[in-house]
Amino acid sequence: MNIAVFGAGCFWCVEAIFLQLDGVTEVISGYTGGNIPNPTYEQICTGKTGHAEVCKIVYNPELIKYEKLLKYFWKSHDPTTLNRQGNDIGTQYRSAIYYTDDTQKKIAIKYKEKLSSSKVYADSIVTEIRPLDVFYKAEEYHQDYYRMNTQKPYCKFIIKPKIDKIFNNQ
Image 1: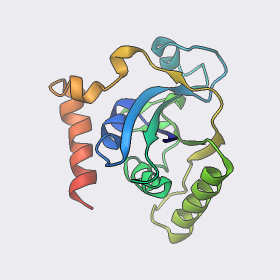
Image 2: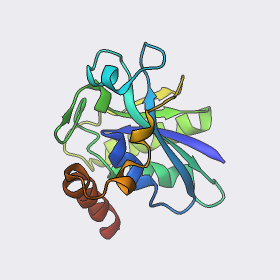
Image 3: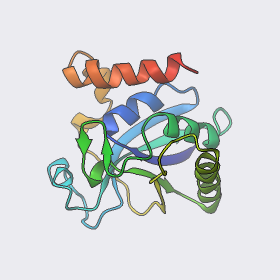
């Protein structure tokens, strides 16, 4: 198994999207990229920790390639908005790829450059590409959030339409 770590706004949305993909065995919501150890959700929400909400995606590279995960990463959010996805605003919602090795780094940079040069987006891509340092698992109530809370307003009105858009427009 391999891992990929992406920040694309609220980790509840990211988790729900990547759990749909064949070859993904687990998605863990958490935090990385900041300057305090063992942050809590409350600390993250202040925007002062430097951490981003991210998902650690555990996948079988025999069934799904890193490039395909990147495809869904780019489709799942707007990589041209700095520190914001929809109504979620703050540095914790930044667009970010945290690579685990040089191969992931090269693939991510190449993919970003290809998207930039092809002008897929009207604005410049602001996605940061950085090495993964320490990943901190988020509190248990954040794990598998969408599946456990499908009737909550955020799930019904934000996550579900996003999933439908991504997987019905392939």
